Image 1: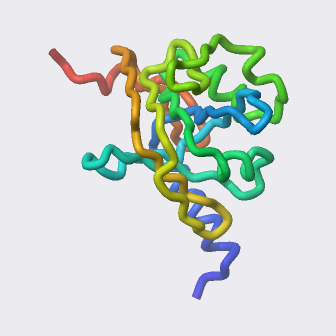
Image 2 (image 1 turned 90 degrees about the horizontal axis):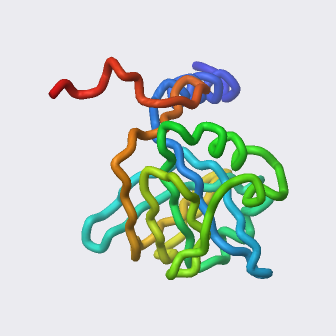
Length: 167
């Protein structure tokens, strides 16, 4: 029987080897300041209604704010936005001062240059161990024709060119 620490290490290894897209989830806090964090725990849930989910670690300093808010945006990062992913993964208090963004008509901070932006109302939250799953109902969608930024084996980068579909 394997130990809990061995299982955690194996789990991290397995999940770290599963490629995912990279997003930055953004919103406004109670003082109307923009907040955001890099997230790769993002997935579609439902087409009717349009639902997505992402999860947030309960130890993140914006955890209580994201748990209380009623709307947020998921900025799906493009292949040239590695610096943005790294910026929003740091503890820099002025993340928005170092990137281009705007306030949407739906009242959310939207990052410029992203592959897509999904503006959501919080639909449900689910407590799950040391994280909370936040399910959002998609209200506004913006999509650009760009390649995605990917996370794989603790690396962030563009989709490898040799894997692009041949025309």
